[in-house]
Structures are given as structure tokens and as C-alpha cells.
Image (tube, rainbow, N blue to C red; front, side):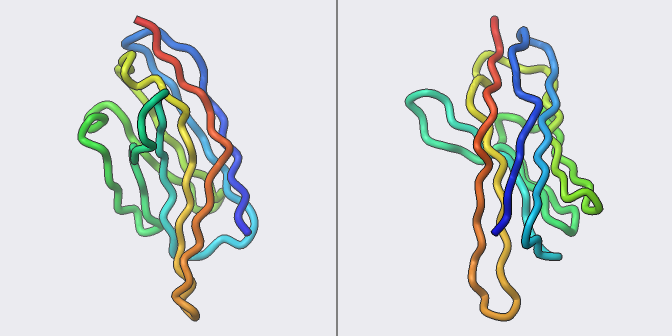
Length: 121
């Protein structure tokens, strides 16, 4: 089991910045991917950004150039720095953890409880 605890959401004006953090604990794999998804009211959950333990990153087109994902492997923590926020970034942001067991190839997927980000115009 992996537990994910998020923090850093809140209310900010358009053009402002927020930094989300997610700490993972439990049965952490040495090779994994951590990331952030978001879900706005009435919309499907979508990938925002992800970062592998190797450091490779992936971003949604809508946040490229504005958001930066990073991680501290020693602290099992992933961060999402969100700059130039727009009202359309308003959503619940969920931390995500993915790993594949090297022995069994079983996938391990976990979600955080979510943190609200609201951007006012």
C-alpha cells in the first residue's frame, strides 16, 4: 500500500501562483511515476503533469510553460509549481502514484484525496 498526502491548494487570483505538494509513504518502489491529475465540475479527470523516478516529465498541453513538476526522491515527495494561473485551472487536483512490480509485473496505482484549487478572475 502507498499513502499519498497532498497539500498546497487554495484560492488565488488569475495570474497568481500556487505550489502543490504530495508526500508518498508505504511500499514505495524504486522505479515509479508520480503525477498530478485534475477534475473540474462536470468534466473528466485529466492528466496535468507526471514525473518518473528517472526525472522524465510529461505535461498536458494546456499547462506547458506555466506549470513545473519536480520531485525529491529522498523525501518521496512530488511538487507542482503552478504559475500564471487561469480560471480554467480551477479543479480538484489529485496526486497519483504508479509503479509496476518488477517481479510480478503487477501494476500498483494509488490516488491522493484531492486538494481544491480555485482561480478567481
